[in-house]
Length: 274
Length: 274
DNA sequence: GGAGCGCTGTATCTTATGTTACGTATTTTG
DNA sequence: CAAAATACGTAACATAAGATACAGCGCTCC
Image (cartoon, rainbow over all chains, first blue to last red; front, side, top):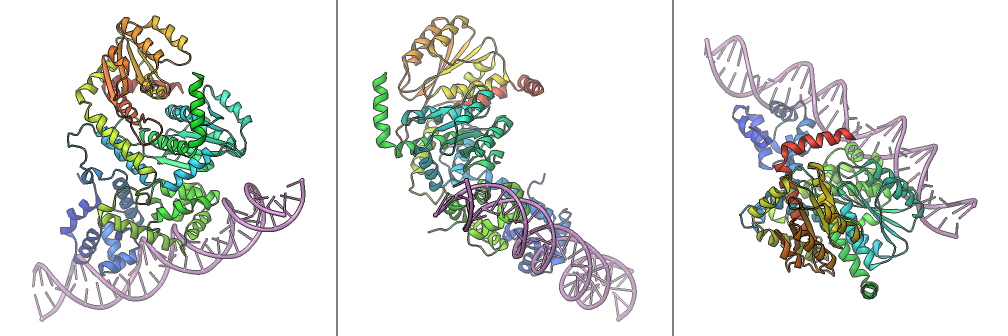
C-alpha cells in the first residue's frame, strides 16, 4: 500500500536512470516544495533538463506535470489539516482517551490559528455597537449554537433576536431588517438552501452578515461581511460544531467585555426582575 | 511587525472591498493551499473573477501573482522545516483570544480525564438500547446543548424528544415517562429550581436520568443515574459550556456507532423523505 | 572494438495562465 | 437625490509554462 508520493518515489528510485534519480533525490531533499514550483525551477535545482523532470513524473505514473502537482498539493492539504500536533503536544497522557477528543482539540487549535485577534475584535465591536438590531439563526444542527449565542447576547444588550420556527416565520422578519442591523448565521455542510436564500435577501436589504461556517465555506460567504471558518472534521459519522461553539463563546466574552459598563447595570436590573 | 501573509491579510481585510474580502476569507479558510493553485481555481473557489484575485494580491503589495505564490511557498517551506513553529497563531501570543482558548482546551482535557471510557460507553449503551423513549432538556444557557443532542439522536433513532417551551408544558410530559425511559438533563450554575423539581419527579417515576453539569454538581446529581461533570471556568464573565458540548458530541458519536446498522438504514430512509 | 540501445539535452511548438483594457454596476459622498 | 468615485466582471492579449520531436552522447553487450 503506497499512500504518499514520497513512498512511491523511494519505491521506484532503484529502477530510475541517473538523471531522473537526481530529480527524485532533489525532490525528497526538499519535499514537497520543489515539486510545486515550475518545471524549469525544479530542473535547475536538480541540475538536469526540463524533459528529464517530465519523464520523471511520467514514470511515477502521472499523465502530466499539473496532475503531479495537484497530487502533491492534496497530500500537503491533508497534512496541514490534520496537524501532527499529537506528536508536538504530548500534553494528553497517552491514555488515548478518545480519538474524538484529540480531533476536536486539533480542530480548535486549527480554527483559532486561522483567526486573528483583529478579526474577532472587529466582529465583537460590530456586535457591541448598538446602532441596530441583532438577529441570529442557524441550520439544522447549528441552530442550537445560534440559540446559545442569542441567550447570552440578549442579556447584555437589547434588540437581540433568535429566529426560530418555520421558514415562513423568520422570512417575514426580513421586513424589520435594514442597514443598521446585523445577522449572525450558522451554516455548515450540508448547506441549507433556505438559509442561503434568506441570507441573500437580507444582504440585499443591507444587513451586515456574520457567518459561522466550516472550512469549505457555505455559499453564504458570498454575502457575508465577516466569515468565521471552523474545522469540523472528526472521526465520527457527524461533523463537529465544537470549534464553532468555542468561537461563539469567545465572541460572547469579547462583546461582554466591550459592553462592560452598560451590561453590568443591565444584568443587575435583570436580576431585580426575578 | 508583520511576518506572515496571513497576518498581512487579517491586518488589511477591514479595508478591502467586498470581492477582495471574499478572496481573503477563502484563502484564510484553506490557508495557504488555494493560493498555490492557479488564479482561475482561486477565483472559482472564492466565487469571484480572476481580476479580483489579482487586485487582491496586488493590494497585499505583490507585483504579480507568481511573486505572491513564491512568498506563500517560502512561508510554507519555513513552516515545514521547523515544526516547532507550528504553534498557535503567533499573531496573538498574548492577545485576548489565547487565554480563553487555552482555558477551554484545559477544561476539555480535565473533563475527559475524569471521564472514563467505560462511563461513556455505559451511557451510550443506555441511550442506544431502545427500550423506551429519550427526553432531553436543559437550563437557561444549556438548553441549546440539549437541542443539539436531540437533533442528532432523533435522526438515528425514534422516540427522541426535546422538551421545550414553558415549564408547564414539559412538566405535563411527565405523564408519558416511565421506568423504561431516559431523561438527559443539562444544568450548570446557577442551577434552576424548576429543573431540579422536574428531575425529582421524573426520578420518582423511575426515569433514568443522565445529567450534564459543572464540576460543582447540580443538585440533580442526587437523582441521576449517570453524571457527567464538565469544567466550565474560563476568563470571562460567563461560564463555558464547551467541554459539555464536546462530551455531548462524543456521546452522539458513540451512540451512532452502536446503532450503525439501524441508523444507516434510517438515515437513508430520511434522505428519501426529502 | 564496433554496433545497438537507451538516456539526456536543445530547440520548437502548443497550451493555458496571468495580465490588462474597458464597460457596467454598485456604492459613497455632497 | 444626483453625481462622482470606486469596484467588479467580460473579453482580448501577451507571456511563460509544459509538452514534444529530434539529434548527440555514453554505455553495454556481443
